[in-house]
Length: 338
Image 1 (cartoon, rainbow, N blue to C red):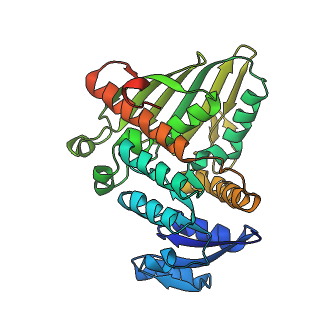
Image 2 (image 1 turned 180 degrees about the vertical axis):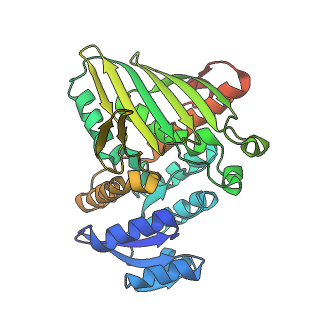
């Protein structure tokens, strides 16, 4: 296809980013329809001269001219929207998670395969230029045989309690990105998960049935181990770091800072804080991610992050929850039979 005609379901923070990128920064794509329940989101779409703007999802699913659907709506709508998109023969780009239930995720994958439509899951951190470089170094053998992956992911502040209650929990909401990243870097499947969690940030998070601090060890088929550490709060900003260690050496990707100045004085060395928000830290990765989706459609190739990737990351998160609850390592064969 020469130009991909797209409909967007949901125009919250992420949907707005995708619309802005598609409307002004990505060739070969045209946003034809946007669906959002609020007038604010609809007005935002009209600023980009989107032809069809509505609160009715049928505007997208019944439009035979559309080639693809971006699903950026609330999590509990994803499964239904992916299914409807597949049934209407439209390629699908879906924000994570596909669903919080493994059985439902499997159903989603099956329906897209049945109708032969591409499905891409939005693990945007794969497309961060720093993390992509680490992946390239590992793939090209620059660190030798991979031994250890270390991932640190700490938010500057917790999300609202209302969000926490419907998020699926820390491992399914936040750490799932790190599970996907570890699996992506290792290029191997996880065979065992051991997780610990606690409430050290806000008692209200515990009262909502979640943790705010988590630690996970992943064991891979190729012998490598990943160590992941998460916190819902870091006083100094958004902390995102990745390190790989192998037989030939080590590679690191460190934080992005507000600027790169350093002040040296009698009290020490002082610099700026890391960026404060994930939308600042990963703004370019959203563009690279969407470019990859459009290129896959125009070139007729498999999307770089597919439904199986979404299934595997979700299964690891469920294994982590089980490990934490039962205080033991959990084999992935206990969770997933594929």
